[in-house]
Length: 114
Image 1: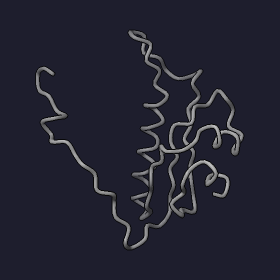
Image 2: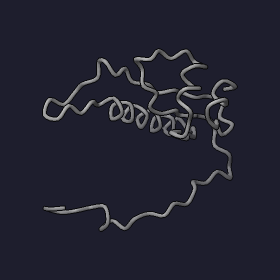
Image 3: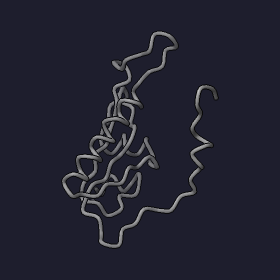
């Protein structure tokens, strides 16, 4: 956690998982060449969050981090893209999600046409 704190905030969690994807072996959509590394790693991160919650743990998904520092401190090879960091621990009793401005459903959902 000390090494992690050099590149991001750990929110005082005792555990962190650095989620990476190997870009050279990721599936590529043949129609337009979309490489799915970020999508696949995001699905994995989401599943880990759900499982942690099921176990009574709190999580915080970090995307604000310095990839160069994290790569150096944890000796992550260049062929791996660092996608997310998931910190896990027991949430404090007064932990609350940050309020966010949310768009109305009609601003993000379209039917039949955009």
